[in-house]
Image (tube, rainbow, N blue to C red):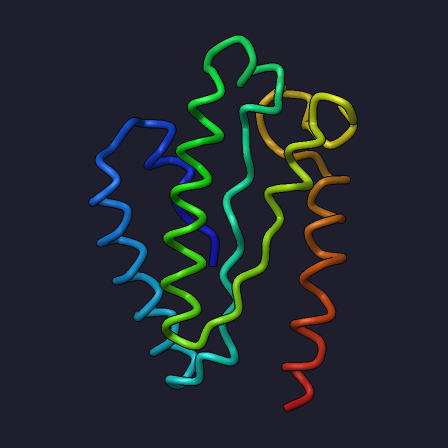
Length: 129
């Protein structure tokens, strides 16, 4: 599960994210048969480290996304759900432009491959159960 970037991007109240994240996480856990071990929450990618983010934002983007990710990590942990940080990959986007899609905003195929490299070991062991 990965949500929240649109809340931040559209300057919606953080309290709205807190509510929506909690409701959606509970729903996902329910859909997983109430087995929190079958759920993984991914951190929000940081679009400040893209050409779009540099020309249309400021460091506040990263600060706010850190707040979103902290809430998601804390909430996931409280519910026994694994939290996987992928934000650091996207924060290399200005130095490693191949991590940014051609639109200058979204993660590239290579970035998604790196996300999967981190995610796969967690998922593969859980699929065996």
